Image (cartoon, rainbow over all chains, first blue to last red; front, side, top):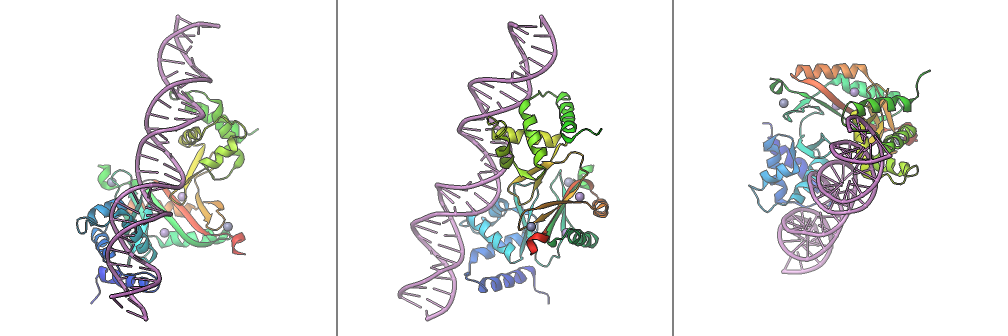
Length: 147
Length: 147
DNA sequence: ATCAATCATGATAATAATTATCATTATCAT
DNA sequence: ATGATAATGATAATTATTATCATGATTGAT
Ligand SMILES: [Mn+2]
Ligand SMILES: [Mn+2]
Ligand SMILES: [Zn+2]
Ligand SMILES: [Zn+2]
């Protein structure tokens, strides 16, 4: 009976909140719902404008605070493509993945390559590093934009 | 008799300048020398403070302008690790490479993996993309910082 | 060398995304 | 209910970078 994404996310969020000195908030659930519904890579501003339709009192600062919280507990992921604006996306239940981005239309495709992941580990080891994380972004032109 | 790095860089820079409506400038050479001498991944501010010892009249805006020029003609490369500050490094003659960064001391090691590069092409192709560029950064802890 | 056109530059204002501050409100354990 | 403290909105502050603009340097033609 497979809990839906929202329920799984709130479970994680509640656990996280109760494991440290944090308190419940209704607004976080509004933001969570909007993020999961969109299922895209959104900027904080974009998410804010979506969320305001549901609760006009939510301020941009709370969007940033909440997204940080979501990322801390694994509900969302962050992606900074151009060094200026960070985009946030639902990461729950999705295994680790990298990104393939169209430089014309901005489309983002999730990709995964166990071979690359393994090679990264090897490269780090060869250089005496223990690997903690990595970032792989491929930039190109999607089939639509090639037409 | 292998021209030295500075000479090769100035050759490229001169060609680039003469191929478009740009003019000669002494200050660019001071900045170039400082960048090549350091041979590290520097922020614009760091490079500025080095350069000011040679020519105190050089302003930070010219550092940014010149680094952009260097990157355009392939003399320098840009690396934005944390989404906030961009670092610049001598790229001349160095083949394409990716980066392995120590999250404790900031050390940056250049790495290269033909296998990964090839797999990236394949992934892009499988998704209907033509690959234009990519960014691969590995974050870990170097051997010194593990002690 | 003179001159005009235009690029290069420094100082500084502007920008833009994000974070910090702070007064007010909401949550929660007692 | 109450007291402690977290959450929030408004907005000021921050920070890296870019734009503006008046001034100086370079070039190529006279
Ligand atoms: Mn990966
Ligand atoms: Mn690469
Ligand atoms: Zn596209
Ligand atoms: Zn280190």
